[in-house]
Image (spheres, rainbow, N blue to C red):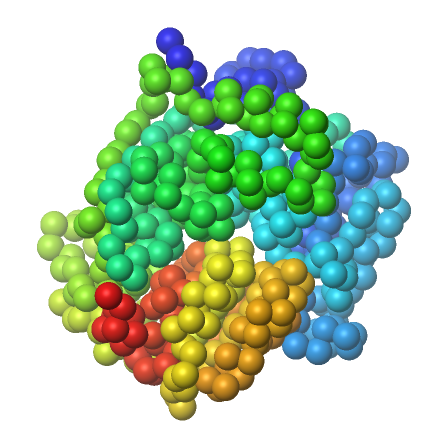
Amino acid sequence: MGKTLFDKVWDAHVVRHLDGGRDILYIDRHYIHEVTSPVAFLGLKNRGLKVARPEKTTATADHNTPTIDQHLPVKEPGSRAQLAAFAANCDANGIEHFSLGHPKNGVVHIVGPELGFTQPGMTIVCGDSHTATHGAFGAVAFGIGTSEVEMVFASQCIVQPKPKTMRITVNGKRGIGVTSKDVILYIISKISASGGTGHFIEFAGDTIRSMSMEERMTVCNMAIESGARGGIIAPDETTFEYVRGRENAPKGADFDKMVEEWKKLPSDPDAKFDSEFTFDAADIQPMITYGTNPGMGVAITGEIPSSDGLSGSDKISFDRALEYMGFKEGEKMIGKKVDYVFLGSCTNGRIEDFRLFAKYVKGRKKADNITAWLVPGSKMVERLCKEEGLDKIFEEAGFTLRQPGCSACLAMNDDKIPAGKYSVSTSNRNFEGRQGPGARTMLAGPLVAAAAAVTGTVQDPREVFDIK
């Protein structure tokens, strides 16, 4: 029987099989940031150890960083101390560290691919759940806990049970105004926020194949929002061309040799998956969430569904979500009030997202009731925005380009949505309080966010921008 892409990469990195279905897995690249590494560094120090392979570790500050005035000391004492400790820990262990203001600084899951650290066939971990992003390259990438971060520090290995496999195939041409974020929100709305539990999802089909690498990263980034352990996409010419020439990628003949190896990674034709789903891209419209988990999503022109058929804890959760959001069953999403718009995060903070947003707000004006945070995912994205004049387009429309960071994806820095306010966010989670205590989050793609930013309400971008 043939092997899946996931099985090929996983099996090639198994150091030893353990009892109980667990494996000791070698890790090719370990990404770290300032939030989940301090305790792991402390544990290592208490054991009298140093990081085993610092050259396999990439460190960048992102979660606690401000997105304005980064040249000044960080105001919040806790964040300032955490960032300082992060830098000191990296220095003590010989780890290259991208601090605030560094030209390579940015959100960890954006700078890794930009710099060519992320490559097909790798195993990649980080103390951050959205490590799944790197699966877009044909890598087995997943988030780990703090004790596991320490384990990788100490041994460059991790003990893990091998997940089951799922394949989600999407075929057909995307409709007008449908972004990769809409595709993954649609998938999660169909299989639910727990439908992928226990699995690694391979995304396949010609719809996925037609996506750019940045779009594929958005899809894999949110695989875990279905409960999956991670997402993965087979590498192809699109992948190879993205990696080619990047700073830490192989060069010349070495690159060509690696490409020949990477071409062997896609799932074999007779590979078997534990679960399979197939969707038609023609059924997907621009999406938006109405509840408090990413699975509670509908087409932008749709209505909030009824709780009919739900019972027990499912109905309790549904009712609580609508109460928190201030919504009711059967209401249309079009016209819903919006106070904040957030463009950014490891889901939609790449240059293609900013180009798309700029294309449609150009010549228009930000709605007076909207506070907009446009936060590039890295210094490289920020630089490209300025080189391409996107910042000028934003300024003329009433927006301001901020500095890189996780920003309003999560309430760990100054960019918090106030209690009771509504945010259309291009990030990945809409849990209660995720963007700030009492904040109400509606997840969407950059186009839906742009439409909300210029109208002040939830609107169909195809209508607002007359997209044909």
